[in-house]
Image (cartoon, rainbow, N blue to C red; front, side, top):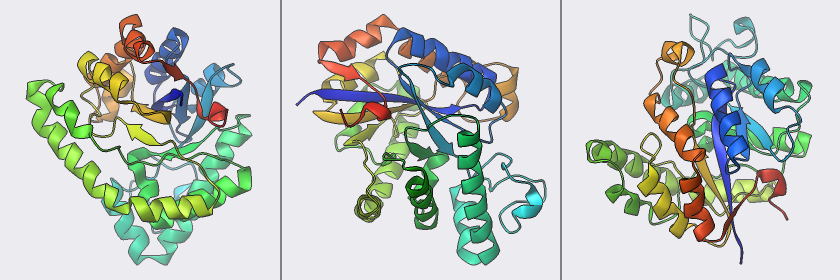
Length: 293
């Protein structure tokens, strides 16, 4: 069976520098997929660059934490904080929608608004995923699947790494191995939800790649990691989650965790050396819109 790999760039539309980095990587040939934040500050800039781009698949990166929503705050009572932002993280989101009916109603309105904004911009999304994998939360997943049914979306990210991801620990730089171990543990714990997630997704007629790499080594990608990955990718369709970007004033102003690592990933995904790691193992690159071929 042929090995096919979707290299997807998350956070498209967050900043102009991220958009430009994704574009540069796409021109190099390996990166052929990205997911767009409808509530990102550089959404319009991303649409201008990627709208109708031949050979490139753009999906929706649903965002329910950290940023301002698409809808006005007054329509999202119970979900939005006093300063007009979405919950700070998945735990706060879970607590709000688990205890307030108003938050669950607001959640549905915001998710549909994000999808509608992307479609209204003239894009036809190839797939869905979410910021910080919040579509693992059953209440969120149910709405995302409802949106997928409405718009005939056939693919969604299954955010569980394949067995064997611990092997990357020796490739991560020494100063980052403790944090890698923490991320790996969190990834393994989330795997407890794999069966329930997969059953819901399959029942909805949605497909997922066989494996998603990059969760445990988010922020720690390097050439050694990608060289090992090239040898690990299994036959069939897999996904590599990435976060390329340009570290500029706009990105620094967001105070996110991923800064220098975005610049590193941009260089790696535009590198002929990196491309050679995958080609040596007869891996072909594609996007979700080509997943059924």
